[in-house]
Length: 87
Image (cartoon, rainbow, N blue to C red; front, top):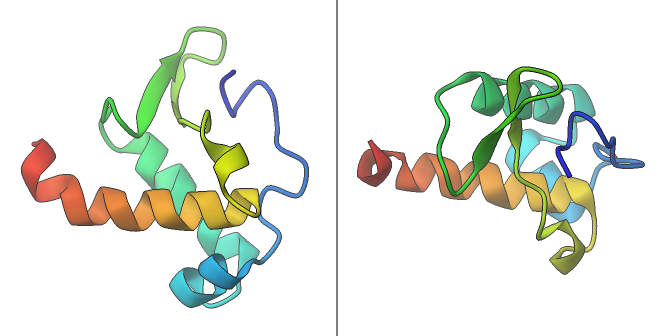
Protein backbone atom coordinates (compact mmCIF):
# COMPACT_ATOMS: atom_id res chain seq x y z
CA UNK A 1 0.00 0.00 0.00
CA UNK A 2 1.16 3.57 -0.56
CA UNK A 3 3.12 5.00 2.36
CA UNK A 4 1.03 8.17 2.06
CA UNK A 5 -2.29 6.36 2.59
CA UNK A 6 -1.12 3.83 5.20
CA UNK A 7 1.29 5.54 7.59
CA UNK A 8 3.96 3.36 9.15
CA UNK A 9 3.99 3.45 12.95
CA UNK A 10 7.25 4.98 14.22
CA UNK A 11 8.36 5.50 10.64
CA UNK A 12 11.05 8.06 11.42
CA UNK A 13 12.21 6.86 14.84
CA UNK A 14 16.03 6.81 14.78
CA UNK A 15 17.82 3.60 13.90
CA UNK A 16 21.49 2.77 13.48
CA UNK A 17 21.28 3.32 9.72
CA UNK A 18 19.26 6.51 9.91
CA UNK A 19 21.61 8.03 12.46
CA UNK A 20 24.60 7.27 10.22
CA UNK A 21 22.88 8.74 7.16
CA UNK A 22 20.86 11.59 8.63
CA UNK A 23 22.66 12.37 11.87
CA UNK A 24 19.85 11.06 14.05
CA UNK A 25 17.33 13.70 13.11
CA UNK A 26 13.88 12.35 12.29
CA UNK A 27 12.98 15.67 10.67
CA UNK A 28 16.02 15.46 8.37
CA UNK A 29 15.08 11.97 7.23
CA UNK A 30 11.45 12.98 6.74
CA UNK A 31 12.57 15.91 4.55
CA UNK A 32 14.91 13.65 2.55
CA UNK A 33 12.12 11.13 1.95
CA UNK A 34 9.75 13.90 0.89
CA UNK A 35 12.40 15.35 -1.44
CA UNK A 36 12.91 11.92 -3.04
CA UNK A 37 9.16 11.60 -3.48
CA UNK A 38 8.81 15.08 -4.95
CA UNK A 39 11.59 14.51 -7.45
CA UNK A 40 10.75 12.45 -10.52
CA UNK A 41 9.15 9.01 -10.43
CA UNK A 42 11.93 6.41 -10.26
CA UNK A 43 10.23 3.07 -10.83
CA UNK A 44 12.35 1.01 -8.42
CA UNK A 45 12.02 3.59 -5.59
CA UNK A 46 8.82 5.59 -6.04
CA UNK A 47 5.33 5.20 -7.49
CA UNK A 48 2.26 7.36 -8.06
CA UNK A 49 -0.64 7.30 -5.60
CA UNK A 50 -3.95 7.85 -7.39
CA UNK A 51 -5.73 8.62 -4.09
CA UNK A 52 -3.30 11.34 -2.97
CA UNK A 53 -2.24 12.33 -6.47
CA UNK A 54 1.42 12.41 -5.57
CA UNK A 55 4.48 10.14 -5.62
CA UNK A 56 5.34 8.01 -2.63
CA UNK A 57 8.36 5.98 -1.52
CA UNK A 58 7.90 2.27 -2.15
CA UNK A 59 7.95 0.36 1.12
CA UNK A 60 6.98 -3.22 0.19
CA UNK A 61 10.33 -4.46 1.51
CA UNK A 62 10.26 -2.49 4.78
CA UNK A 63 9.79 -5.76 6.71
CA UNK A 64 13.27 -6.86 5.66
CA UNK A 65 14.81 -4.08 7.77
CA UNK A 66 14.91 -3.70 11.57
CA UNK A 67 12.87 -0.48 11.31
CA UNK A 68 11.20 1.77 8.77
CA UNK A 69 13.85 4.45 9.26
CA UNK A 70 16.59 1.91 8.45
CA UNK A 71 14.67 0.96 5.30
CA UNK A 72 14.34 4.61 4.26
CA UNK A 73 18.03 5.33 4.93
CA UNK A 74 19.10 2.41 2.75
CA UNK A 75 16.63 3.35 -0.03
CA UNK A 76 17.75 6.98 -0.06
CA UNK A 77 21.45 6.12 -0.21
CA UNK A 78 20.86 3.55 -2.95
CA UNK A 79 18.75 6.06 -4.87
CA UNK A 80 21.54 8.65 -4.73
CA UNK A 81 24.14 6.08 -5.83
CA UNK A 82 22.04 4.79 -8.72
CA UNK A 83 20.64 8.13 -9.91
CA UNK A 84 23.33 8.64 -12.61
CA UNK A 85 22.35 5.29 -14.12
CA UNK A 86 18.57 5.77 -13.85
CA UNK A 87 18.17 8.96 -15.84
